[in-house]
Length: 115
Picture 1 (cartoon, helix red, strand yellow):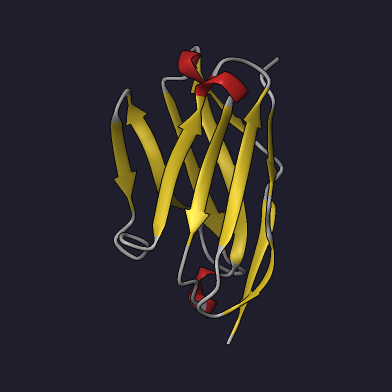
Picture 2 (cartoon, rainbow, N blue to C red):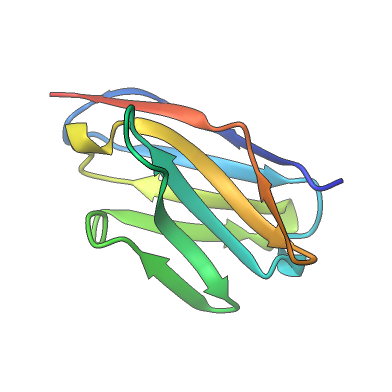
């Protein structure tokens, strides 16, 4: 059973930074896809950033230039560095991994950005 555990969320003022972590129970090199999604109240879950294939990254237009996805293969962990946070970045952030053609989600971590 693959497990993903997020951490690092919190309350931050606009302009501040947070780093989210997603720790996997298995090697992240074995994932076909690993990404960060977020869901704001009353809105659909949306992709924020992802590793789509080895060495390929994707960023939503709204976070490009502010967020950076990275990985530490030795720690089986994917990170999301979020800088210059805005109130519209508020939401619950989820890590998603695709492993053996199945989707796995973490429980999420809350990010709240105050103006």
